Length: 568
Image (cartoon, rainbow, N blue to C red):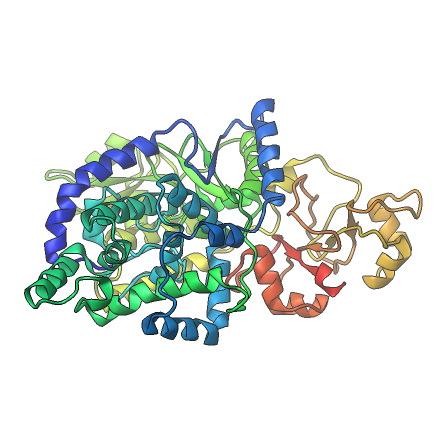
């Protein structure tokens, strides 16, 4: 989203209202519509535990969200328009693009659609991030717009969205959605209920749309969207959204496969209670670090904010696993340093004395070649006498570099630098064993990376399963402690399909939601989605869709669903 100079003054006047609205929502005792919220002590309270179980059941049994949206669309889609037809044709010729975008939207779409419904806005607005960012929260435009809704820095500030070196609310799904929908509601009111003009203004700024209207009035021309002399990007922008709505509304006429998305909360917010290292959070939840970053894209470093509220977003099916591990952990692992802005007269000795930190450690963490300090510089201060490890020094370097990128991607050079930092995050090594597995009591059989969890189908027998997975009957019976050949349909059993490894772990009590006949596979070293798909004789795209994965990043020890029921 871009915004004109004229629009900035209008937005500034509107900003106070938005800030009040956003602050009211952020301090709500209960969750935002479309996303559940749980406290860190959920493992202690039976009422919370039951509510969580009910939420998971509701999610697993929910209808397809695409069908719901189809029924809730309310805007005229102008299907007969030439501009809309051009966009429809493009989408129909690029269905692989739609599949990727729809898969990427899966974690966020329910929350956003509920926010749209709560405000009684047109359901079509939930499609806007498809055009803005391809539903990629890390998307950054050449102009510096960022996040699902592509908010510009000045626009975000005017809407009360915080963004600094440590946190960028433009990427935060909750903060950016609240701000974007508030702005769209304002634009609709500004243009007296005309949604096409409001959507156009979201792209180019209300000042530009207003100027085009005045120009047409002066020239005696119509002032509807289709008649206005707007920039070509904006003339394409509105038809792109309408074309998507047409395709979703008319599956009989425009057959496009969109992966099913459940019409229930997929995400939950957990109030951790204090700052936590996101690498540890991912291990506690039993998910890959990169996946956790994708669900919490607002953080610029590997920790949550140093100020309350300390919340992270997780898949709802991972909440209990996370809180159980959190309760059992000896300590929550926060960042082992804080930030200090150097003042005039400060010395390393005085700062060291104030924070009880070792001068040598301060110099190592900040790569200080001399004892001289420049006022205004931000230093990372190790907590008391803590000596930073090699990994912590690398993380600190990441934060130090971020400190000097006030608005990422304002220049091409900074854009490349920021991308390099992101690649470093992706390359971060993760533990192969989910911590929850270590904390749970040991079972007689220990699942190993490469093993399979299988849900029994009606026609299955022990012999058939052993033959299908090329394991011996003895190994299958031993892994599951079978006392007979009778199997219960719907029951999950372990298939010992692993290769010899040195490290093993118990399976946790929580496994992904699967359909009878599906498989839960524990990723082992060297696995790729393509390799796993070939092994199970299904397509890689089916694995991506079932696990809401839009890239090739897998973590050793991570559990993923293999939709083997497709094989019949």
